[in-house]
Length: 173
Image (cartoon, rainbow, N blue to C red; front, side):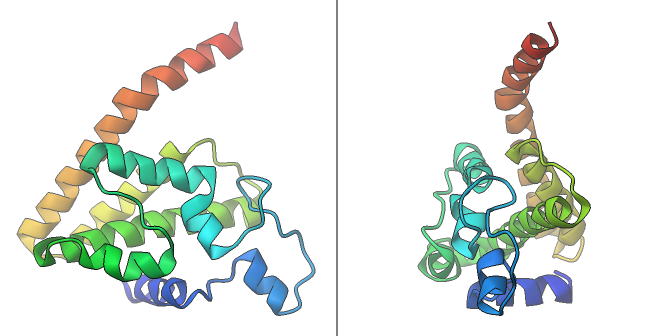
């Protein structure tokens, strides 16, 4: 992974990513609501509890039977250690990419006033980063990460694509 992503993960693990609650502790006087919902924006909420994050983690559960971590400490502790050592690097890359996708999407909403339509956008953004960073891995690990991305994307399109399509058709008529 690139150095800035390693630093981002280090900040996330230390719970010092500049979410709105952490900015508030530094004297910031802005809106404290999550960019995706009306709850207070904390690290725990943004990356694990928000409906957007939950959708992302539930998709991982559907695709790979990976149960979501309970909190950030759990993510970097016993949750990560629960995977076989041969898979940990791939899991770290995947988690980093998905958390990075959440963070970038959140920042797009905050600074560029864009909207994130669904957690499926986050998944496709995350799989983009996984594929990109998989090029820095050993050949076998990189191939496995790309295959996992493909599986996750196909699942998203199969399970959610048809439902969202029908939903959009109803809105237009």
